Image (cartoon, rainbow, N blue to C red; front, side):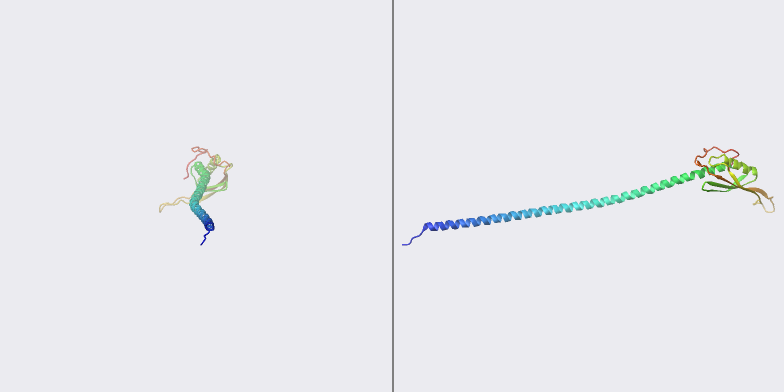
Amino acid sequence: MIRINLLGSDRQKKARALAFDGGRTLTIACSLVLVAAFGLLGWWYWSLSQASAQVDTDIASAQQEVARLQSVLVEVRQAEQRRQQVQQRVGLIEQLQKGQSTPVQLLDMVSRSLPDMLWLTGMSQQNNEVTIEGRSTTLIGVSDFVGNLGTSVLLQKPVEIVSSQVETVTPTGVPPGQTAAAVELIRFSVKAQLAQRATAAAPAGAAPAGRGRGAR
């Protein structure tokens, strides 16, 4: 007669079932851990990719902004250079205008101081010293001219006669077959110093004392 121990078989089956369930649970747990790890790694990689793409975009934008600012800076520098050039030109023009004021007034004053039968042959200025050369038919004309110059606010007193000498001049342009008598002229040179307030000339239209007429 064969005996079968049913109790022991049930125990072995239960033990095997328990052992199988534990291994399966561990496998599932490990799988879940691996899946979660891969998921975290994937999310981390995706985040880094997004951050890297954003950084690249920011860098590109920054480079474009730098390029734009550089072009603006170049334009600003060019505008500054043009402004400086304009200022230099304006300053130069103002200096020229200031420098031209006294000579123009001086020429006007001298032309108004010319008496009859007297004309100028040269006029020069060195620093504040003005030298005038000319011719006259009489000594009175030279004296009147010097007196007229002495009344101007542009020149300091006294106005000096540097030289005066008589020279004989033969008229030119005489028709053929005719002769002309020689003429005695007085060649003179006067010198004066510009006044400190030379720019404060007499008002236009104010004629100096004496007979003021244009040069002949």
